[in-house]
Length: 158
Image (tube, rainbow, N blue to C red; front, side):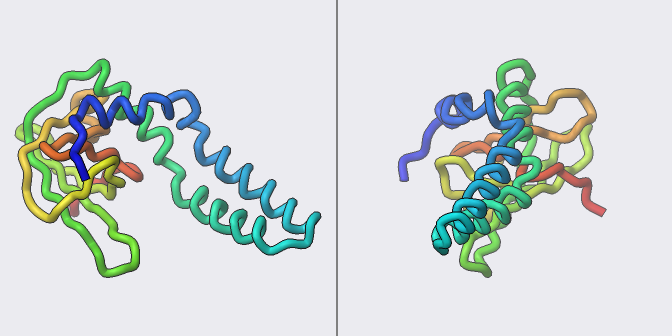
């Protein structure tokens, strides 16, 4: 897989900014339509699609707004330098990706992320970090190979 630059990865997300804040509503609405179609046509395919979309919609509550925040922070914010530890959990059928962001003068932040157009590896990497407000959690982190956008709200480690 050819690695895209940070700018190219952000450019891939820009078309989503218009409807990303309502992404969960769109997914859940489509799931409801599929389930209604399954009942009306008495066919299992729309039901299976509807159940899948319903589960995905419930699980992705923060993804859409986080994409918007990341693109806005990239456009308006100033990046800072730090490092990120990436952990890949491949114990299930689908890999899950976790990051711990560290930078001087800020607390550590842990979050799960979904890679966009790149394949993360385990390790510690130099990173550029964007946030909306000083002291707030990072909304976008970039390493040499790609960007990390939080899947849910980051948490400070205990």
